[in-house]
Amino acid sequence: MTDLKLLALDNEDLEVISAHTQDAVVRVGDMGYVAQDHRFAFLMNRYAWEKDQKGKGQRKRAAIHFDKVRDVKVSGIDLDAKDGVLELLTMTFEQKDVPAGEVLLSFAGGGTIKLEVECLEAAMQDLGAAWGAKATPQHDLQD
Image (cartoon, rainbow, N blue to C red; front, side):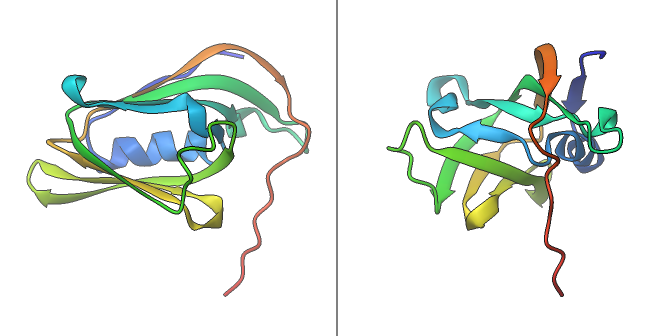
C-alpha cells in the first residue's frame, strides 16, 4: 500500500485528512504540545479506509502535526492517563479572525482538543507498513 502524505492549508484540505484519519486510535502519551515551537503533534494507528475491501481492513502507523498553534485546550480527556487510548472521530477548522481560527479534534466518548492557531497549517504522513485490522470500525447512526 502506498503511504499517504497530506498537507492542510484550508478547511477542505483538513476535511480530506480527517476522512483518512477517522477512527484512528491514539494513545494519550503519544500526543504533545511544544509551546516554544508552536506545534501540536500526535502519533496514531489509523484505519486505512482507502484500502478496506469487504471487511478486510488495514491499519497504518501515522503522524500528524499542526503548526502555528497559540494555545491548546483539552476537555474530557485525562492527560495523566498516558496509556489511555482515544478514538479520533473528526478534525474541523473554524476561522475566527482570518486567517486565524480553531482546530477541533473530536474523540469518541466526547473528549475534545481545541487548538487556537494563527492559520491552518497541518501535515499528516504514514510512517510504515500496514497490518490487518482486527475489526472494521462501526458507528451507530442514531437520529
